[in-house]
Length: 166
Image (cartoon, rainbow, N blue to C red; front, side):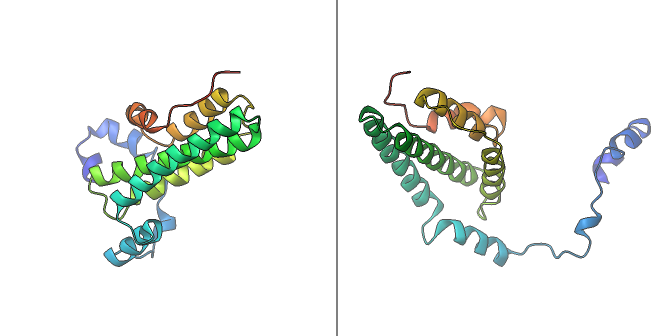
């Protein structure tokens, strides 16, 4: 109401006509700190957000090392699975660090962006067999779950591929 009141009367109707109904939220209790803390605790599994971020980034490095070795050993399908795991671990580390940077102690932004990425993953048909093309596909899908301005920072968090384009 406050936002639309600041608009010119001619514009108010056009703007508010585009808002979706919030009737489905009637009767819902607003989340409290306890619910937020429980949600964050479920993701953190006893770690702090910073500790989990560091662990996920290490996992991303380890998975990429294994993916590279598997690729060079002729185990392409297994290499792609490890590449997938590496990029998801780096993505989670990025989300945790971004949440910390903006003071999101309940990790709401992590959960929302994770859900967006999971939705994007369900829409992927099949990964290309070429590791470089597969990485582009995975990383593009994950980057779609964050603001475009954050894409560069997220992209820097992905581990470098240790394979040549096929």
